[in-house]
Length: 389
Image (cartoon, rainbow, N blue to C red; front, side):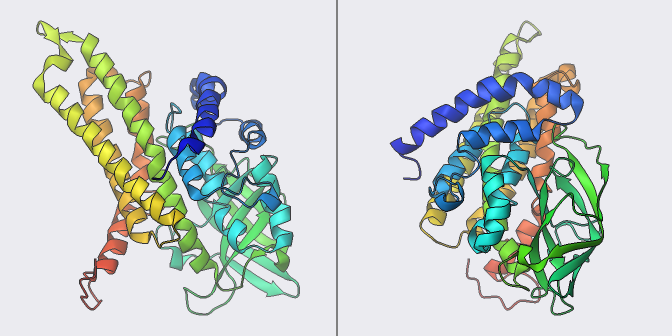
């Protein structure tokens, strides 16, 4: 069993925190196109939620990944997608490789303040010409004595305008594309780091997203995470937690929209009865709730496997794929039942419709998830068909 009675108290504390410290402010943050990351993260850090499964010697709780998954699921109760995503970047996207492979020195400098909430982190992988195709990134970190000199740019960087440091993937040699990359912690105040612009997005409005340039940025090599040339491997490992976390964060968000739609269609009248009374409506909502439960079962199974130390690439990829596609189908169907009100910005279903669309793009597009799965099944063109699903 993934969750036990030991999860109940942190779950209750987090639910209360969301209800009192986050949801009352979401509408304001959405209108402002940003939320106060330092203020919110410091509160979460004080409660221990930014390092649930991080080492105790760096301020973490030292718990297994099931607690991180519990947190991801509960954050889905936040009434927007941007804030949960930003928190997830801090806990499960910018810091897992650092916690696992970083030296003691680099972990004390960057992981400790990320866990306490004293610093905001972001992850720099995607570039304008290399989104899902991570191997094609062009940002370079040239060796110069004891330093790296970084040049290039990153795109779609969550927390980018507020971050104190970035976990940057860069080419540290001219070798084979899967063995020439390294992850480097770069303070955002370093000379030559420029936040070029804050992006104006369709959804996730309360989360700041930036384009960042690096112009002869000099950082010490001691800021590198783990071994030089292993950055691609570290990032692929890090992606599994990110994708599983992202899928789990969809569960309560999907259920919230189903319940809001039930309530709205029950009270909305047309042709002498409520919209909910139409079989096509209540049947569809029942189907959607069933799909959410199936997704939850897949995520929990993957979580149990990860806690047991198993490779969850296949299950995490499936969960990420299913979460994105279900989000698109579910919010589209529910918005339709809200009629004209669903097309206004004042309803929760329109926000969910916009926010959920990113799940099929960020952290690896649906098509990349399908490529990963086909490769594992031996059906990807160019590979010998092994049929080992």
